[in-house]
Length: 615
Image (cartoon, rainbow, N blue to C red; front, side):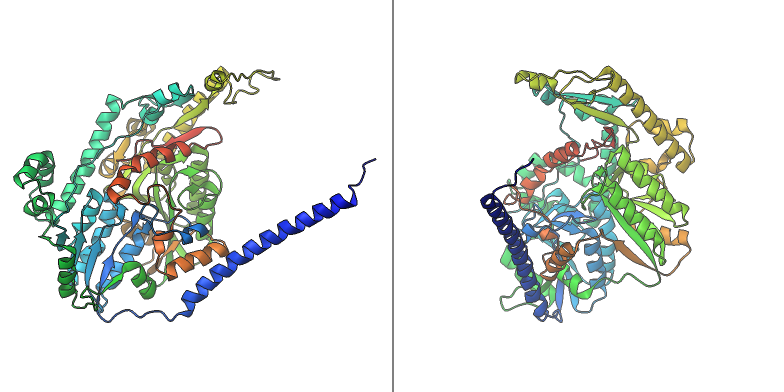
């Protein structure tokens, strides 16, 4: 017979439970009250009207992305930091297009000080909007204390570039260097068992080597040179430079710098990279004269593009909808927050969009180096289901759409890529770590019995069972053949033709089109037009579908947009927040390596992932 706790114990236990409940209720209530007061504060204040004459200030912060990650409550308490900021590319395009026909906007000023990552692919999609603005006859002026390579890519679209006399333009060219972990795993006594398919097996080199193989170097050099030619070809005509001028300047930089007396700013001016050297006060005065409006301090009147867009809004047209669904990040199983691609979350978005009666077609915007085989198949099947229901589907590739992302794209009616897209990487590998040697160093050993030869074979604290190794290799071969078959069917190629361009090889967009992996080269806007044509609609509106948010997330999102912080409040502060932009850019490869390793989360340990799609 079980004895009941004493009255005193029951009283203390009940009291503690009551205190815990009250504490949680009060903390949640205080949080909601605080958020509510902030919302009422900003919503209750009559919005400041837009000035009658001003410049649009295009000042992207942090990383330019297709879709922002979620806003977390604690980020509202942090200082704005470019290290954690994100700026939507479509917001930039919409604001510039709206300002081009707005009589109140007299000029466009681009300030790249807080821009960390932009990228060639997104610059190519931004360029037409800036060209439309220039066609309106209004000046475009870029200002900066110092221009990194990414920042200069945006600044070069301006009619004039103003540089601080103590600044400079840091052009280096493109490179693809990545971390290799073989020696690190050996020192840690961790065994990474990798299984691959295909003759060209460099898809998982970072896990197995300490350096890049010669074959991989040749392939990487090919697409790097293609993209670098696009970069120089993008800038040189805009700056009135001869073809090859940037290459010559970079290769002879020390000698050219010596000729300018060691002054990087004066060198940039003499080489035609910038138009004028001005102090900040001189810039303020000059901009005020070009804008035609200034404040009491003599500074040009400018409207940050995020605030302008929030008040002006973006016109998306009339008629039936072309739904744009964004898939950005590593491909992972289950539900995932924006910033990663979840098999269940993205599949649900696609199915729900196709079921809407006013959706004529879907454009899936992809920016991913791949990920889980299982998750990729779930999404591909959902995309195939959407297409089978009669809804046209077009895939628009962003900077990277490779491996698992390309696997998904095989279900689309058409595949579009920007000129600077990296794609392909048609290959499969399996990776499984074992740490029995590491544990033995600490005096920890694993032993026991099982009912079959396979029992306990996938424990990471035991050496990999040969039966499990053989099964993983067979699984890799089977998935690779499935991959080849899907590409063969969707691209109208033979298995042999696909295999010749597959085997993990990365292709630039132009090369991918030549070998038949991509239909057309163009922007997201071009892909939307193609989707509308497939649906047979000439009048349509573009609807960028966002992931479903909880009421709390919606409130935080509205609050951040209302106070004009937008992409700044996109994440928690980190250890790099106080570092200069150039230093934060140098740390990007470490983050890429971290994300690549953390993305190995397939339930069967099978991956379609391009570990080398970064530069």
